[in-house]
Length: 334
Image (tube, rainbow, N blue to C red; front, side, top):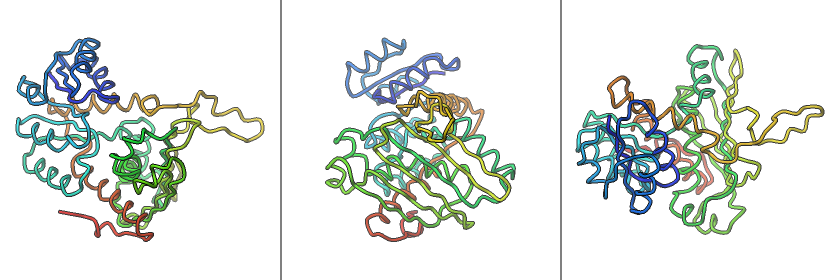
């Protein structure tokens, strides 16, 4: 197949490496807003060059992968749908909730497959946790703990445009707990602190957050996030049920210093970057997308999944602003 990749920043460049190595991808076309970046990546991976997303789509690609800036996502998704080709798009669908709802409806009405990038669905341990829940090994799940701790804040300009910690970072946890448990969130209560760089408070954001999610069956999840975890990039999940308890993300690369006497685990070195911790998951999700393009499977993360996560993030943002629990029905749009 011939695939197009739009956007060649940090994650787009990584995707270029992955796509160029997949045996099902016969040719790759790349483009970025910066021509020098386009040429450098194309030369590195042996891809063809397009001077714009429009010319890339017109070049006869079988599908597109969108790794461009968030404010371009909806326009590019629509362009792919209008061309009649499957689309992979990094999260989110849009930085604006109403726009996300509209483009999701556009995708659904088209019948064309769109996969949204939530790579933890493809991490082996997270997948095993979902399988354990589905098999009934945990009995009924009552408590979930999900963690994403960044080593250091992104630059000021990124934080300003990110939409806040819940829309930018916590969404990965929100997607994970919803997907693994198979349950829908009905209520959100979030709190947080802007302690750290001054720009978090300036932008009405928080640098450290805790979110309690209540599911439709009464189970609860606690999501922990921070921009300040200098020991490394920490992504973990715990599930506790009446029959068993399981965890994902515990390994020798987990960035924790164990204080138990005589215990040398984790041996390290700790994961320090999200693409180190989740490299295999990023690769697996693009391999899955080629199966979607080939018609061998349905989208493993649909626009409806992405919308459900967006509603949770919106509720968490409102909750931390108003210091109260927020029902998902308060923020849900149709």
